[in-house]
Image (cartoon, rainbow, N blue to C red; front, side, top):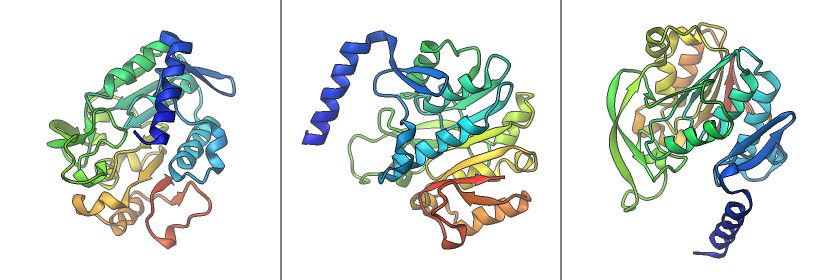
Length: 266
């Protein structure tokens, strides 16, 4: 381990001793939440961080805090450990509903444990599907619950020869099909973070895009080539849905092209 890894390991061990089975607390205003040690989301102060990933996450959390209301239906696509699922469940309240999609078998138990810690199991439906543009069996590339699990090897990161990469078959389904079969209305919000498959996922949500749903979509352009898609494809999907799109980070512009970060589709 290097010095940074040793520091993280020591902090995690100390948190386990201090918080134990109660989980690590975090508060967003009046929303007091708890997470399994090592799975807590970022604090809002990182919205101005030089770390692009932390900044992006903090800005997304603030966006949802400002807009998601009691009674809303939220789709959490790419739920990972439930960092957002727990927050959404708190925001929508007992009258609302969250559907979390997480195909990574190693991540789902922690997602479910986080829901249980907060007594939100009744508010969040956990689905094992990936989301794509067709109903199909695909390979998921994963690293034991790593947040970058992807339907493409390039979405996972690292080198192709890394020996810690798992690969197994999962079921993918279009969002339009899922909503129809689950007899759910168009959601109020969608958080879409699928490590490169975002354009394909949007292609499978044409009816959803013609609703009033607000979509927060994280872009991973480094994986698009493997999916056979491009920025032009994203622009076309948004246009065909009669939507507009802007980067969440106000320092970025759509006309400057694709970059890692979140876009808001309205």
